Amino acid sequence: MKKELSLTHWNRKEHFEFFSQFDEPFYSVNSTVDMTIAYEKAKNLDIPFFIYYLHKSLTAVNAIENFKYRIDDKKVFIYDDIHVSATIMREDKTFGFSFMEYHESIAEFQKIAQNEIARIQNTSGLLTTVYPENIIHFSAIPWIDFTGLTHARNYKYPDSCPKISFGKLIQNENTKTMAISVAVHHGLVDGYHIGLFLDALQGLLNE
Image (spheres, helix red, strand yellow):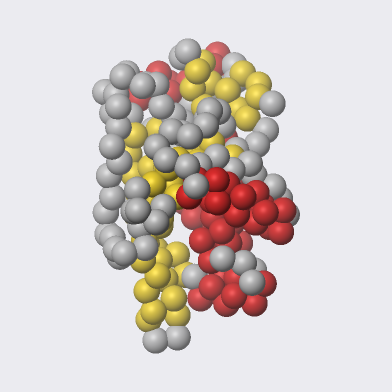
């Protein structure tokens, strides 16, 4: 479900209209998250680490209102729930764009994710289903401890979905960390909101 925001009474109206005129309204922030507790928790629960931190990321997204905004025909809508399209690698080293519905229960989400991962790994091609607007674009780059990241973008396509990417898991003495990149439409999300997301995510990873 979604509802339209009234731009007239929205305190971000000027920001939205200003950045929506840009050829490239997206910007990205790169940071680092502590995965020490999350890695052990995933192992103890026998949940694949990728699925574990994907679920925590999606839970944090759904906790921040601005990450639930999407643009459609120059109007802004807020969705009740945000799901995810994650890139899934196949044995031949190609990948496909998945679609996984969010579920508050990590046990239920694990079933959804594992079924979708299996589907992608047994299909070919890039676009394998119909993707709704209420998603985030998610990717893992586990080979690289990146300090910056850009995304391929088609400026003719009216995209407003946040893009979240994780890097290589790094062991630092007694801690484990991962690089994270968050790319967002500046008409919808400011640095303050990315800060809220990163704080929420770290809190969930530390549970």
